[in-house]
Each structure stands twice: as C-alpha cells, then as structure tokens.
Amino acid sequence: MSILEQIDKERLPQHVAVIMDGNGRWAKEKGKLRVFGHQNGVSAVRDTVEGAVELGIKYLTLYAFSTENWNRPKMEVMALMELLVSTISKETKTLMDNGVRLFAIGNLSNLPEKCRKQLYDAIKKTSGNTNCTLTLALSYSSRWEITEAARRIAIKVRDGDLGAEQITEDIFEKYLNTSGMPDPELLIRTSGEHRISNYLLWQIAYAELYFTSKLWPDFRREDLFEAVIDYQKRERRFGLTSEQLN
Ligand code: IPE
Ligand code: IPE
Ligand code: MG
Picture (cartoon, rainbow, N blue to C red):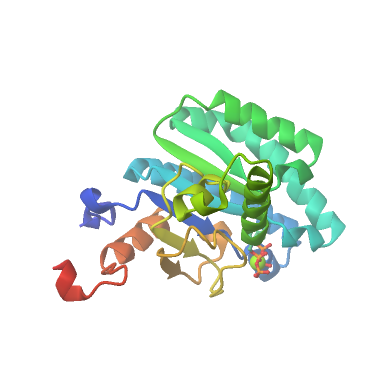
C-alpha cells in the first residue's frame, strides 16, 4: 500500500502548520554557507504545498521568518529577504497551477518595500484560488500577534465601540492575524528541535505536535503524508475521557 493510500481522506486535518527549521545545519553539513540551505529550502516548500493540495488539505501555514530572526547577522537577513522576493515572483505560477491562494501573517510593515510589493501582488493574483490557502508567517511572532490584538481591542473599548464585558474567546480571535481560519489540528517541526519558538501559541492550543529529525531542505510531500498518518493514529480528547469519545 502506498503512503497516500494509508491516509483516511475523511479524517484529514483541515489546517497544517509547519515550523520549517534546519536550513543552516543542512548547509553546514555540506560545507556551505547558511544561505545555501535557505535556497534549497524552496524546493521543500514547493513539494510540500503540492503535497498538501494533492491530499486535500485546505490550509497550510508555514513559518518562514520570525520576529526574532531579525536579530540574525545582517548578511543572512538580507539574503533571506532577497530570496523571498525572487521566490514569490517565481513561484506564483506554481500557486496558480495548483489553485493555491496566498496569504501572509505577521508584522508585514517591517518587510522591505520590494518584498511587501511582491507579496501583495501574489496575494492579489491568487485571491480567487480555492484548493488551498497557503499562509506565510513573515516577521511573525505569536506574542506580537496577541499583544497587537489586545491593543486593538483596548482602543475599541476606549472609544466606546466595544463593551469590555463583550470580550469572549470568539471576539478575541477575530483580532488575530489568522481570523477566519480554522485552528491547526497538526503542527510539524523539522530538524529535531522540540520547541514552538513563538509560533501560533493561541491557535495550537489543541494541535497535535509532530517532530521529525529531517532538516527542512530534505522535507518532501511523503514526509507530510507520514505526519498525517501519525496524526490519524492519535485520539484527540479535548479534555474528555476516552470512554466519552467512543
Ligand atoms: C530555518 O532554518 C529557516 C529560518 C529560520 C529562516 P534555520 O536558518 O533556523 O536553520 P538552523 O536551525 O540554524 O539549522
Ligand atoms: C523558527 O526557527 C522560525 C522559523 C522557522 C522561521 P528558529 O531556528 O528561528 O528557532 P529557534 O531559534 O531554534 O528557536
Ligand atoms: Mg533554526
């Protein structure tokens, strides 16, 4: 039985989030500069996106650049921004061919002008696609996102547009960057690190976590399929007992 046949299409996660980690170590293993790892991470992104579409996953959210990543050496940050610009323009065709709608979360105003422009162009161009929503987390951190939501809510309350007693989880969620998306049921992190690194803290409250030692540039759709198979073997209890569920 092929990997794909082992997956129950009726019980797919709607939303898969990925922390794409290990580009630097992948390059180092090959005696190359870290940037070489980032460049090779692009094929992993392409294959994973195509795999998600092939499987029927509706939302794929990739952590591409964190708020904390701005503190990396200037050379690496610049190379990553340039790679982002060239990748977005080159890969728009792949997105169109696969019916993928592009979206972005994070403090996008911090991105270089050129990068923001490419991003908004691609978002606009792909806005009618319905197979899958690919969200790039760029200049993103969860604490920034939650703080931003709290600040915007506070302003509404101050201006009399929202009553403090009206604030519920559902209302709060509307102020997050991911508003309107289902929460990820599955979170994948590559490179063998077992941490969340400030990613989607609110949204992953009940996500299943999947860690693989594969470094991101080596990740392919089969690895996504393996993660989904693992996910489908788990019992998601949401605080209930196993007996209550069965
Ligand atoms: C992930 O790979 C890509 C980004 C964070 C931009 P890393 O660059 O973190 O690679 P490692 O973890 O140092 O190997
Ligand atoms: C998380 O990876 C951010 C991205 C994948 C974009 P990092 O490599 O920056 O995370 P830490 O520093 O190992 O926690
Ligand atoms: Mg890393």
